[in-house]
Each structure stands twice: as C-alpha cells, then as structure tokens.
Image 1 (cartoon, rainbow, N blue to C red):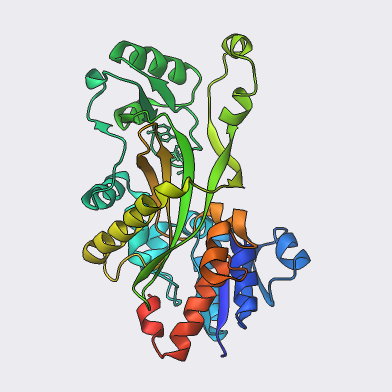
Image 2: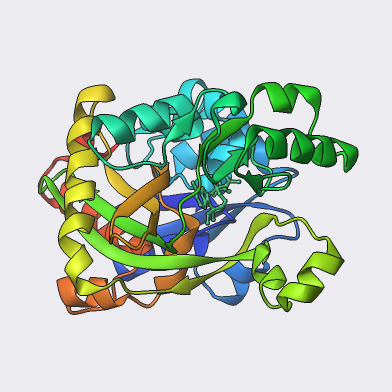
Length: 345
Ligand code: ATP
C-alpha cells in the first residue's frame, strides 16, 4: 500500500516503526533535532520530519507533510503530552490509529475512575476529604510530576504534618493541597498489563506485562531501614525503565475479564470505544485481587519491555509480536478487508 506509518520520535516509536516495517509499510518519524539518533541508528525510519520542538507536530506544515505521505499516525503518551490533548482532539487533522476521543478519559482522574468503576473493576477506594483517613492512604497531586511530593500516611494528623513538610520542600503548593487526591494504599506487587482490542475481530488480546523501575523509590529500598530513616529521603516515582514480567497463571481469568469489561464500557461511554492498545496498571494484593490504579487508553511505555515479543504474545501468535507490530498488523488487516474506517479517527 502507499500508506506511511508515522509517529513522534519518543516513548514507543522504536517498535511502532519497526513493527510497521515488518508488516510492509513505509515509516516516518517526527523528531526534534538531535533526538533522531535511536531512529537513525536502529534503522527504523524511512523518513525524518524535523521540528524545533516536539509540540510543533501540530503545526500546519508538519500536518501537510504527513498528509502528503498518506500517513496514519500512531499516538503514544509523549505525543499526547507534547502536542497537547486539546490540539490532538481539535487541530490535528491527520488520520490517527485508535479513538482520539478516548485520550481525555485517561487524562482526567474523574473520567478514568468512572470508566474503570463502571466496568465493575476494583480500584483503590477514594477518600473525599483528609478528615476521613482511617487507614494507610496514598496522597497524589495533579499533573505529571513523576510522583514527586506524593506521600503515604494513615491519619488526618499525619496528613497535615506531611503536607507541611512537602510545602517546605517546595514540592507542592497550596493549590495542589486543595486538589490532593487521596486513595487507599494497596500493598501488593505491580503489574502493568498491555492489552490490544481488535475492533476488526471484536476481541481483547493480552500482549504482554511489565513492572516499573522507578526513581527514587527503587533506590530507597536498596538502603537498609536504619539508614533510610537517617537519609530522610522522600520517595518519588519517576519511571526510568521497565522489567518484563509474567503473572501467576491462575490470575489470568481476572486479567481477561478486566480487559473485556473495560472494552464494553468504553464502547458505551466514548464511541467507537477502546480501539487498539490500552494498559491497566495494577497491584495484586494478598487476596489475589487485581486492583487497578491507572489506565492508559493508548500504547503504554511499558510495551518497550517486549519489542521482541513477550511470553503472552508468543503464546498467541507463535511469532515475534511487539505491540507496535500488532498495530500495523491491524492496519494491514483493515486495508485488506476495506475497513480502515473502523480503526481510524
Ligand atoms: P504516571 O506517570 O504513570 O501517570 P503518576 O505520577 O500519575 O504516574 P501513579 O502511576 O498514579 O503516579 O503512581 C506512582 C506509583 O505509585 C505507581 O508506580 C504505583 O506503584 C504506586 N501507587 C499508585 N497508586 C497506588 C495505591 N493506591 N497504592 C499503592 N501504591 C500505589
């Protein structure tokens, strides 16, 4: 076909582009000058569109170039963050893989909670006001801040002391305090589960799982407890890498059920639904419950942990299947059956 698969040069661009080439497409990457190194050195891009800043991907000349090459753009977390959500919704008139209207549902905490709980999926309980704290909770603040200033406490008094401390460190402001999000602390192990919903087949696939490698919480836990207290470090959760992981096999029915339920709810709440990749970030507790604390309604960064396939994508496909390749396989299937309109917005 004469279609080019394009994305922004960041996040998961390597396997999105490599996967596109494996499926026989031409590829293009929109890159900030100086950031092209991986795409050049790994040889995944046929075309480079250079911009001064990533946010310029929504500029009309860049959109013109993309349309001229018959591009289908694959959105990822950095694309949405740099381009700006409302620009992607209203000003980016290039065909995009998946449902662009669903991106807002992962960006706004209330919408995200509505979609997950309406699906009957277990989330950490939310506390409406700090006075209600009667067990371990995690306190989060708005914006993508890598968890800086987030803290754990178990009473209103401790909440107030820690708020004071975070303000003194200049990690949070008074307006952050007003918007503090307080939720039950779930003690468990982290799994980020990467699903693919094929609208063509009306079926949910589990393609892989990762767990997060985060500074400085993963650094802190390497310090003996005694020294941790003296070091007086506050944890942050800036993702610096991902480990591939598999889940206890008896939890897989729950894994599929959660994916199926979310897809059904998404069809009702935001048409045409959760087309393509999505991710549920969860903690598995002692009761072997999967508790979801966050979702991505597009390809998640943790899919980089299986660029060469995962245990699950191997079981499903018997060939190397990254999430990037799966996207292009879907596009190829749609072209062959004349159903591109089902998977693009
Ligand atoms: P992201 O960049 O992924 O949006 P964020 O800054 O919004 O991150 P979260 O992903 O919500 O932060 O949380 C950061 C980390 O804190 C997670 O990796 C998770 O391990 C942990 N965490 C989040 N919510 C809870 C919870 N309710 N109970 C226990 N741990 C949690």
